[in-house]
Length: 608
Ligand code: FES
Picture 1 (tube, protein in one colour):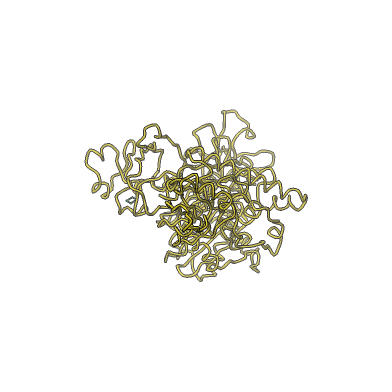
Picture 2 (spheres, rainbow, N blue to C red):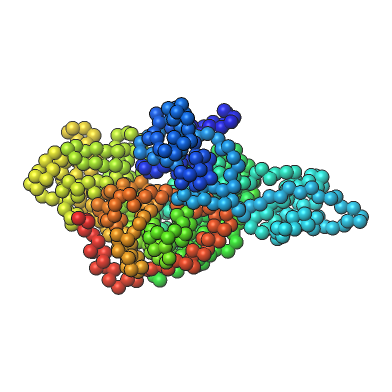
């Protein structure tokens, strides 16, 4: 429950987060602001929330709360891990923050591109015949913004109707508008994470850094293909398709913008800037740039740093001159989304050796040894999103997301409903558990029936066939249900996952070699993206998707692209940091590696 001083504005929100993430991060990633000045590091003692039924008490809680408060469930949000369903009361912010916590524990000092200045101007006289524009610019001469024709057109009437009491709106050194009266309290921006599958929008109040509303939906380009290659191919087959894809992108972004503005009670005309983090293809399609050369070797983008773009160029109807800050890309397959991800995780500001893996159809991998940063992209295919998997589905109600095998089969199902299929994290869990109990051998083959009875007698009867293919029954809707009516994992599904994980592990092993490192040198693995964040670290290690490391070193990083987009709206310094990253990071082309095939085949087996 997000409490508000005005009870009518108190709302109940239900959010789904990766297990183990702190309540503080869970809230922040879902657009719910909690007081903090330390950025979730347990030192400011401001992030007070009430957890229904309580949670383990830390020494910091004891210092912060009275006995009664502790008994009532009050805890510091950054010290409570969401390991089960939790009901949490979040009090309203007590202070107007100067900094915001964004990304993976990043504290961002607020210095947004949007600035507003309320000025009361002297009215013109015969002795003072300065132009209307000069009058405004003189009053804000420390900012020296560039005027805009759009502003000039209405400036005479705005000044006179408002008795020369106006607010100048400046965005990134451009005088975007002059508004009647004092409007300094309304300064909004929208951060977009433009994914191939899912698009997320966060409406931000840039004066406080707090998220006002968050919405997400499937990218409406889906009918043109599930991945970037099929969408690029569609534009090659029919010249009209580019326009249709651009329109679908505009429709998606506009729907989300309208949704967050409505939910936040914000007039779209008060949104002065948007930030867009997307992969190179999604960015090109959103801007109507021909994407063909991205899809064929030698994989070239039209531009890595898009020029100044207006929100209207993306099909958005916000403030008519609202700007769009588009994230720069590193390469055709390491796009603005991963640059945003690097910003959100502070890959360039941490001395530790860290590996960032954004798992998706195209998997981006970044490795930093605290000094140098290298990156690559691995074509993982659609397995993690449920594509090419017999009972595969997206992470929606009815998807099996957790599998535990022992004497019985324990399933975690999204929405706590009857299982309908298997999503990416369920697929990884199922395979990892089958390897663990010995029903899958190291090469990824189901063991013969006789061996199955020996290694896992309680589960052996679930190993059956559909036609010629061997399958393992995860869920049987009725005792006598045919295998075709059950949720199963097939031999081919296991192969698909092996190909996906081999592509990814070939990617990170190559990057480790590039920096002369061993897998054990990696101090932290950040699993990002709508799939990676939900992955069980133990299963990821077992199947070799990540280096063989203690599970505590593997952390869920959430939607890092969206978080990076938020950071760029809240701080020009961070935005400049994103541009600097594109100079700092060395891109390694995986398909350029001479022995790629040998490496790939080596990585197909499951780790011992
Ligand atoms: Fe500072 Fe929790 S955010 S103590």
